[in-house]
Image 1 (tube, helix red, strand yellow):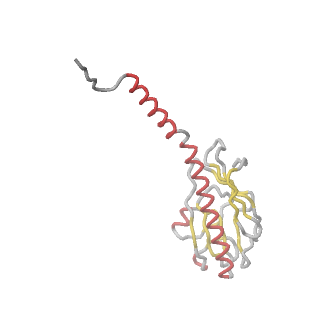
Image 2 (tube, one colour):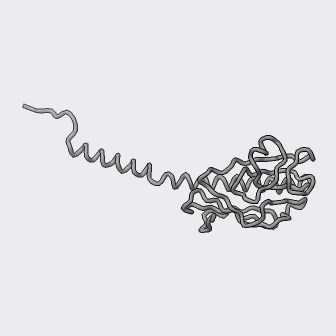
Image 3 (cartoon, helix red, strand yellow):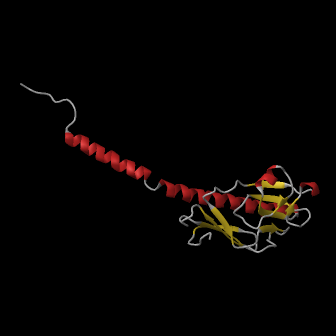
Length: 181
């Protein structure tokens, strides 16, 4: 008499569970590290686009264009915005500077061209140059150039860098050992 087996053997179930476990561990392995890496890279590439836009706008309009960090509430209300001394606070803005004073004043004809979102609370942004980038009609920076360092966490892993030269060109450097402290 032939007996037919229905179901799985214990060995087949154990092998299947082991394979599923390995695949799950690969899928969830270090995903926060990858997210931090992407967040830092995306933010600096967006900043690079805004710096390149400011430079192009300055040369095409024969105007002073300023890139700096300003109080987000004042920006949203289209009020007078003074550039902050800390790139880590507020929103980064790009604006016409009709008075050549580094202050956005809509009553004097200054116009905000672009606004970047604030960085997340867990992240930090530092700049080794001045508190603002001021582009003249030649596209050069009249302020001190430097390097932006974006730190997506407090343990200084996945830090990225963006360098701005005196000629107004921004270069994405990628990974850096520099810290935001």
